[in-house]
Image 1 (tube, helix red, strand yellow):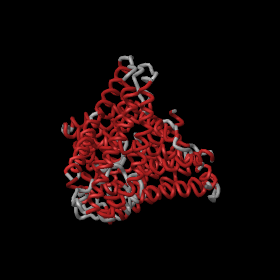
Image 2 (cartoon, each protein chain N blue to C red):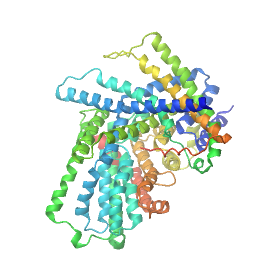
Image 3 (spheres, helix red, strand yellow):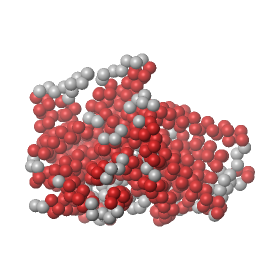
Image 4 (cartoon, rainbow over the protein chains, first blue to last red):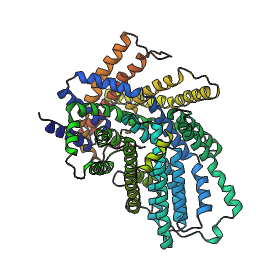
Length: 436
Length: 180
């Protein structure tokens, strides 16, 4: 059988079984088993078992449940409520200020958590009702939570970056450092969008009336809300970037920080711990089983020689090296419409990274582009996870249609951010080069 | 039918218990890694075992959780078309796609089993400074595959019963899984 036909059958079978609703991990594992049998024979199954064992023994991966658990605790800890109180006093008097404050809190949350759900859920329950009550436009309010909530995977720490590091062989610390400036840039871009829009259309985000504004003593007192988050961020990121601990150990100190904040805010309970631990197991196990399936997938993919085929095909894309990069970003964006980010990462990196490297691009820079793209994927229909999280907590008057429409301007802003990082790679790679 | 009912309930209960048990491992990772940081940074006396033990426990945690996650519907899938079908159509599709599921898990059981068996036969140790035995952790691969297959069988039985109209399809839909 020719390699073209074989590859076509392989990707076709993956696609069909995915659409039939079989979980991703079993589709990857099962389809790959069939093709491995016909290319390398049953001996290759032994190698698959050995790779599964290899995946169980990656010390870096131990960071994943810890970062997830940390986010689950922080989501319920009441940190967000105090932060919002502070932003309300400081930003409220400006038109659109509450929305800008909300995205700032999202960025702070992202610097504490490695996943995106926590910020969306916290801000959706605290900031959204408050903004709606003060006659903010509902699309402006929904959209800012959607877009800010996705930064969890871009601003370090980030579970997705740990997976990228594992597959690509880049260092976790360097990737984390690479996410800092692109994350800040997106924060600035989105805040500017909100600020400018509300300056010209004040009815979208009316400034707080005089009598609702806080005075200076209140404003200063509210500043204490940032103390705990700053300590947590310094503990986790500081110890990784300062080279004191491995990312995995830093995650453990982060868990301590999260538990301490739950205690300080009087939200700590054993039930909270137990429930968070179960949710963490479900999420971690889900990712790990995709990884086990993905090892079969890469074995089959490379075994058939499909990588050669894809590399040859990519040479026909117009625009040379940049054409390929843009083409890859489009593919990832389309996949993000139907698939989970962890899954996309594990399928796409083995396929696309060799091409990116062959063109002489920096794999670290590509990783950051990948993550920004995933993050846009979180907020775009139909499969964006943030949309579903948000739908679960919004007040009854808001429909899925409102949520879908709300992301349009923010998607445009964030896509321009992606383009900026493509055109000026220094935004991503300057800090890691400086530090590592 | 009483046997089938008993079988389904037993397997569900086993995987549910395994999930609950595994979820506590998280606190072990936390404590182990935290101790390591404290000992190394403040007392300048790192252990040889803390990180390796956390890593081994993590392997067990990740792989044994498979059955529990299947039970709770946590394995992520593409439901863009799937969610629009009727309960019966879904059951029929699931019966068909379970072939692929059993193929993957079956191979993991057989070849993971032989991997573990070889390790057990020569009492393999990790050769690190701490040098713990590796076979208990390797045995988790076939065990996890077995738990997953058993859970898959209960799902298959349920799907067949739904298709035959023998079971009311009033089982609550598993909630949509979470993502990163």
